[in-house]
Image (tube, rainbow, N blue to C red; front, side):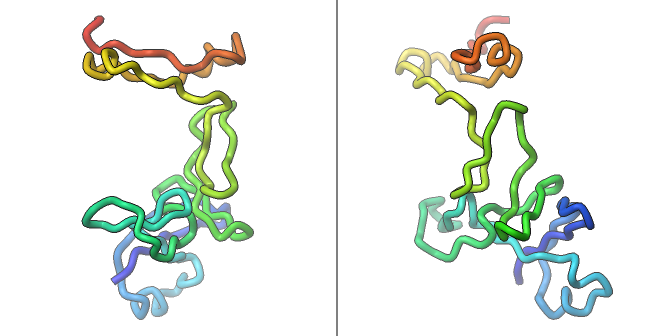
Length: 138
């Protein structure tokens, strides 16, 4: 069994299924289906048991999801762009913020704080964009 993504004429993934290759080959729209690897993220293959990179064959950069785009030139599944300012990393076919996410202090991590991207903050000041969230503050 393998995972396959149905890709429409615009290259957008509309469905992901688990099937045998023979089943896909027998479909009237067999050329609309592209194999994807559940264990591939960012151009690397991961062991399903441990979640650790295992050196296996990374198939099409990322596991396909509904709404992802299949880029035939790159032979890669690319997720939707999360924010207008983010850039595609060619090696991973994943999106990256234009500025690095700051590190949390140990105290912030223990308090359950985390960062989110705020596109409006970035557009107002291109040196800013990551906003710390404190879940204990309403």
